[in-house]
Each structure stands twice: as C-alpha cells, then as structure tokens.
Image (cartoon, rainbow, N blue to C red):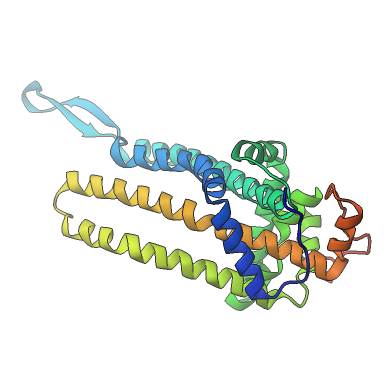
Amino acid sequence: MAEPVLRPLSLGEILDRTFSLYRRHFLLFVGITAIPHLLILVLNLWQTVVMKAPMVTTKGPLGVQVHRPTGASGVMSLGLAWGLVAIAVYLFAYLFSQGGTIYAVSELYLGRSTTVGESLRRVWGQLGGLFGVVMLNGLAVMGACIFLIIPGIYVACRLITCVPAALLEDLGARESLERSFFLTKDNAGRAFLIYFLYFVLVYAASLLLMFPLGLALGFSAKDPHMVRILTGVIQVGTFLIGIVVGPFLLIATSVFYYDLRVRKEAFDLQLMMNPSGNIPAATSRIPSLLS
C-alpha cells in the first residue's frame, strides 16, 4: 500500500491528483457510478421502447371493437405513478454513486485499497443521512438563487464539501453544511473553478456525442420506429457520459476536502499520529450558515 502524501495543494495540483486518481483507478470509479445508474438506464429504455399510453376497448359503429387511449385522468394517474418511481430510482442511484465514489477516493487518497462492492456497501447504512444532506444542500442553493444567480453559485461553491464532510466525519445534515462553510472560507473561487471545469467536460462530451444523434433524430421525425431507436441510443449515450464524466467532480471534491483540512487543521500531521485515518473534525466552534 502506498503511503499517503498530504500537503497543501494549488488548484492545478488538486486537478492533477484528481485526473491521476481517476486514470489509475478508472474501472473502480466507473463501476461505482455505473452499477446504480444502470437502474436509470433500464427505466429510461423501458419507457422509450415499451411504455405506451394505456388503451381501452370500446364498441364502435356496427359493433366493431375499437382500441382507444384512456382518458386524460388515466394518463395523468399513470404519469404521476411513473414520475414517483422515476424520482425514487434517480435518488437511489445518485446517492449510491455519490457516497460510493467519495468513500473510494478517501480510501485511495489515504493509501488504502478498496473495491466497487466495498465502496457501495458502506453507503447502505448512510442513505438516510446522505439524503438529508443532499436535500438541505439543494434547498440552501435554491434559496440563495431567489436572490439572483450569483448568490446561488456562491452558496453552491461554499457547500461543495458538505457530502464528504457528512460521510467521512459522520455529521448530520445541518452540521455537514456548516462544516463545509467553515472549510471553504476564502476558497470559494477554487471551488467555482472545479465546478466550471466539470461543466465544461460535461458539455463537451454531450456536444461530441449528442449533437449528431440530435440531428439524426430531427431528420427521422416522420419515422416513429427510427425515432424510438434513436431515442434509446440517446439514453445509452447519456448513461455513458454520466458514468465517465460524473466521477470527476466527486473525486475533485474529495481531494479538495482533504486539502482544506490539511490547510486549516493540519490533517497531515494528525494522520501521522493516527494512521487509521479516523480523525475527527477540529473541536473549535463551527460557524453557522447565517453567521
């Protein structure tokens, strides 16, 4: 096992370590992201290929049986049920891929080894707390966006490390957000650049893969069979982009989290005295979000 090398990093070094970790453990991170997101892919493909509006059989003129779509209320009921199932599946996949990736980065960054199964299993007991952190984070960012986009972006940058803090320090939802605000003080600019690079990668990959498929879909608008096939291909492409590009942000966030702890709490020295890595947060008072 490699010994962890922890020291304050520049933004370029954070990104270099992120790409280095991802490159060396590509299958691990893609596997952690792909397994939960396969549920989303199956759901989307099933909706695209199989799901149709429910039909009812009625008697038309001369007693001929006619198949008609159900009324608006039936379609709305089906749409509501489908929407609830989709939300549950999306949340399940999102939480597992987030938590599993962060646990994996932590183990690798501290010089230990892990597997896809071990990383995902560790998330199972943390689902409730992780759900609370993600929801509170989203509400905080949306609340800030009420006061225009820039405050929302600023709050998102200050809360970038709330999920690693919640999982790796076993904090509650509110405490993890306050912890992130403490760690990212004077570092919102670096967090913004991490987000910016991630979205550049997402949009570049989407443009490269989805633009040709979108054109093909537009030219095939009059052929329902081809539209269905191309829609399925687009769903697969979206899945591939998500599992390949998605881990970047989580890896970078985790490396950034450890860098902030090294800078503000001498985490590297604490780790030397306690190689197990079970090091609690600093005991000094953590300011609240409103302080």
